[in-house]
Amino acid sequence: MAPLSIDESKLDGFLPGALGRWNGELYAVGLWDAACAIFARKSVLEANGIRIPTLDNPWNQEEFDAALVTLQGSGDFEYALDLGMAWTGEWYPYAFGPFLQSFGGDIINVETNMANDALNGDAGIAFGEFWQSLFARDLVPGTSQDGADRETGFIEGQYALQWNGNWAALPALDAFGDDMLFLPAPDFGTGPKIGAASWQFGISATSEHKDGASAFIEFAIQDKYLSAFSQGIGLIPPTAEASAMTPNYSAGGPLEVFYGLSNEQATLRAVTPAYVVAGKVFEKAMADIANGADVADTLDTAADEIDADIDQNSGYQ
Image (tube, rainbow, N blue to C red):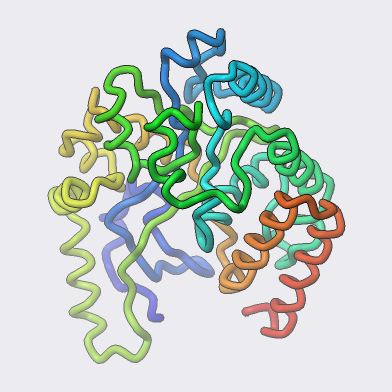
């Protein structure tokens, strides 16, 4: 890929997930961002005496865990929480990696360019043990979750809560109206975090038309087009100005909360080419731990595998 030659002043105020940077240079720009939230129903939380968290005052780990135990114990749901285990691939590092980061760990420490001590350090072990406990206590569906249940289980009442993205928000709003809540991620110790994400426009290093491609990208990131793109696909406009122009995301709009979540909680995944392999290794480790594998051994093996890939590729420098 070639660095972009566009006027970066036009990127002022962009959400971080919509900008692709490497070694201080801009390589890609997205026309949207995406954010995860806990899908919940106000009536369910109130009936079970559970505090409704806010962006400024999210659940901590103890509150989150107690809420799950209470909801499971109500007997009204098959599971207290749906994490989306039926979805595989990129969903795992995007959706669950921020939980690890909130515990204080990471898939890769970009400062040391290593997974060891980041993925399998004390924070990683604490995360892995909590993660495994969710499955051991039958609070969440396991890796054999049916894809159809993932798609409709929350709306049909199988799950009290669901960890999902803003792309799934409108069907939930259609089902529950004003009873529907989109809640911030819990704070597991170092602040609540969610994944930042965007498909982005970039330019091949071998392109014969870099100037024209850069001009197109600079043209496309005007707020009126960012708003139109959001209205077409439902994802988050990457600037406050574009959000204000978009009915779902404007002040008082039904999805306004997601812009705030992305702006306040979004955390980039490890910015390194090693992420391609690391994400797949992390996915396998999370599935294995969910299925009962030893937490420390699994994370040690995963960290070693990621570091071996980094070494084999000369640190991706």
